[in-house]
Length: 139
Image (cartoon, rainbow, N blue to C red; front, side, top):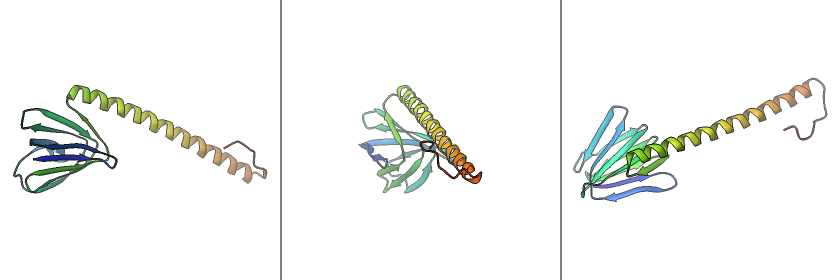
């Protein structure tokens, strides 16, 4: 089989000779073998695992996505984000680190948005109280 995993920015996985693909959707974990019927499902957070003809395995973590099996020989996954790795433990460490960095970035963005919102509200209150002159550099 041929396996492809793509994000809007990159082709993350492109493998031929894949014998087995395992992923997880809302109904649970499932596997796909060659000649499987055409199949489409929405993936939640999932570790996609595949096994090649030589017995080697690969893994890819997707936060969400759409998996499609076509023609019994092609598995395609479109995901907003995907992280690939051969070692599950190392992949877990990378994903946890990236999630931590993403959470910190989101928290900083929220704090900045709140700061701007408070400054706008203060300025509006000043105008409503009769302070007609805008104070420079407060935003």
